[in-house]
Length: 224
Image 1 (cartoon, rainbow, N blue to C red):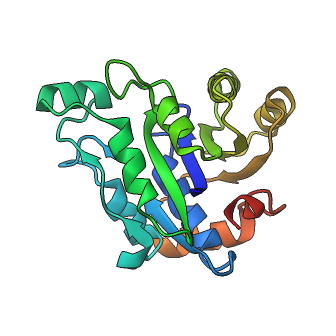
Image 2 (cartoon, helix red, strand yellow):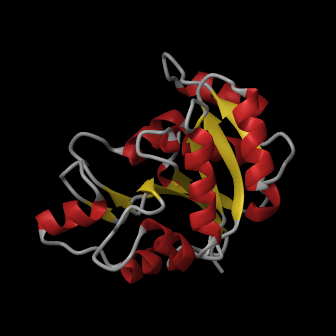
């Protein structure tokens, strides 16, 4: 059975890639007899953005900590549109098969593209890929105004497909009121509040992940 976490977000550009790198840093040595790996199943705009390379940089990943396979599309648009323009429809079963080839010891930190209701083809959304992989989801959201609505809608969309929501990582300046509202109305734990690092360096991210991410250990049982 596949084990790991699916990192999704309330929007594109919210901070999923940096959060995924932080999860790799946090758990690569905390889960005995397991191999924590990063995987980006679908990447659009590959000529401008390479999230796999960025996670490898931020988390100082070796080649054995990266699953470098999946759909890679040139246009920086929604997956369904990028695939249509490239004439290469996205097949969810093919992506599930990639994950299925990983050894039992693998624990995948999977990063989605955009939010959970981004279409990946004419019939499926990103949330359907999460459901097919059967992984708990970590939602990355902003701390700013509007995040309560966006985060609760994302949680509702996931739970409506019987996907476990493992927690939320908020990104930006701390906002205790928004954090409390998300935890209360979403019935979910906020695993940490990550700043917008400037500059964004591996050392700064590692220091935050070690000191601030999931201090109550909510995620560790899901990766064992």
